[in-house]
Length: 174
Image (tube, rainbow, N blue to C red; front, top):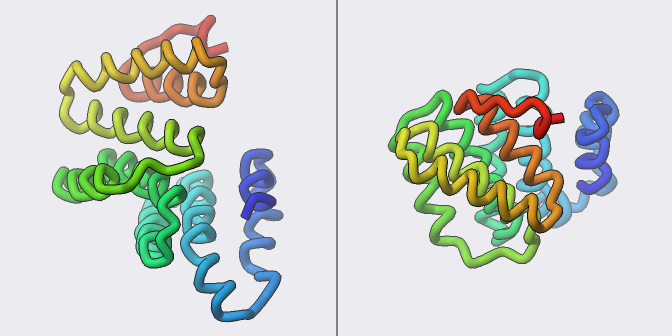
C-alpha cells in the first residue's frame, strides 16, 4: 500500500496500477483486509485520470471495506475525500451523511491524514453551504499549518482556496 501510494505521489500511475492489480498473496484474509486501502488508492488513480464516477465507486467500496475491517484511520480520509467529491457532484444529503459518519469516528492516530481529512471536509462544507465561517476555518487551518511547517497541508489549503474561492496569492502558491 505504501509503495503504491509513493508511486502515485511521484506520478508513476501505470506502475501503481500494475502493483494494485497483482496482489502479493492470494490469502483470503489478506485480500479482505487489503480491499479498503486498495479501493482508496484506486479512487486516487481514478481522480488523477479524471474519472469521477470511477472514483466515487471506488470511494464507496473503500468506505465499506474500511468500515467493515474497523480501519478507522484510513476510513477518516476516505469519508473526507468522498464528502469533498460529493460536494462537487452529488447531493447535499449524501455529503451530510458522510459528514455525520466522520463525526462519529474516534480520533485517529495518523495526524497528517486526519488533518488532511479535516481540511477536505471543511472545504466541502464551504463549497456546499457558502457559509463564511467555513472559509474562515480554512484560513485558520492554513495559519496553523504554516506555523507548524506542515508544507503538504499548506499546499492543499492554498490550492483549495485558489480553486474554489478564487483566492489568488501567486507568491504564496509558488
